[in-house]
Length: 586
Ligand SMILES: [Zn+2]
Image (tube, rainbow, N blue to C red; front, top):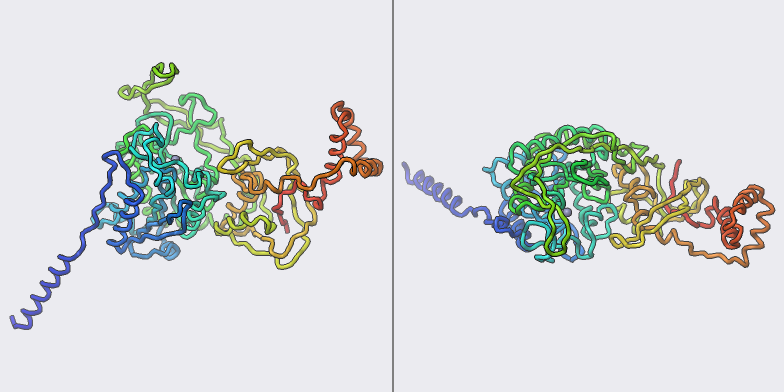
């Protein structure tokens, strides 16, 4: 061997030795769930920072703020180091978004997701191949304010971890009621993440309360009816059963539907699929045809089991999504197109109590006991005496409220917080260029009730009577115009139709509009009322009819109110009882 060749081989050997010898080992990330402790806020952020620093396939981003002032993080894992969601979707890769710690006292998903990210990034791990067809996105902690507020006294019914975060966030909002109305900064930052990713599949991780049974995992799949056509069928008939099967056949944890009992007494009377309105995470995701699951691990199971069950569900869901990425992408594209063209929307669903399936529940024998403290009679579970039984499962919902969409909605610019939320959610909003009178449908709220207690910081509105009147109305330059030919049609209609269960009106955004701020004066009105009564035969007939009621006949103010309401009823000029958002039909 020549000296040059010898030099070459020695140099190469040194290079290989040097290169291998200096490669950093993967970061050591220590989880404490075996010791009944969850990761704290700083530990979670440091874990994801360490993974992002080591693996080029991982990236940690800040995506807006939260009510406590800390940034909302998004951790992405992409096999080919491409972190652009639309570019990945063009390559027919699916995107799975996992949200954790929304109720910070239910942290199984926080720990499970760190473990999942670390495992997934390891090239030797079996699940690493998920990255061939899917991109994984993780919100490490959603309710950061809640997790920073650790206490032994949060969720005291739950078996670990020892210290738990708070249910509500820094603004004392329950974030799993805030997805549609988005009063928290957390929710508005979540919307930014959600519309940046346009995830195909979404998982929101929780822990439940209530009945005890052998299964560690209970699941709320989104109400499949909320997903468009074939996508909903695929979700109900293929995806959801496949995930239950893997949880039940391949893990010791088991999985059953969330034991939701609307109006049912005993668990043996049955459970129902959960109607996840759009203010819940999965219901919100379904508005955009995203396939959503809420995981609810059972509160009475040891914390390590809950973490492992959540880990397995995340892994199975990611594997299923990767294996079906082409199908899911095609079904979602078809659904998106159909949603943009849809004219009639189902705003709410009602449980069909005549149609039932059944599930096998692996429960325990129970015993009635008297508590030593208060002498209360209660049920205790005998966990060494398993009792399995089939219980009715009501899994069918029928449309309860349907509405045809107008060509566009017009929102007077005074209602800025409503317009802002539409924009945050990807809705295209244009503005009128000139002051103009338009023929529109206007809803008058004739009778309503505001909740006596505030709920999520708002007085909720229940409408008892409404009337829709067509006719000309004045609008002004700058008022918002929202066309209903958009991919975001479900969000638009669900939020702007006043009777929809999660609408802005229902959440109290328009309470000021429902107040009668004009006032009227009985002494000045009576002469005018008398004249109108003489002129208007129909009014006189209606009035005479009411006068047969002794209470009415004995109350001058009620009589004058009746005439006032009658003559102003069809006139937009007073603006009384008028829901500000108009429907433009043409
Ligand atoms: Zn929860």
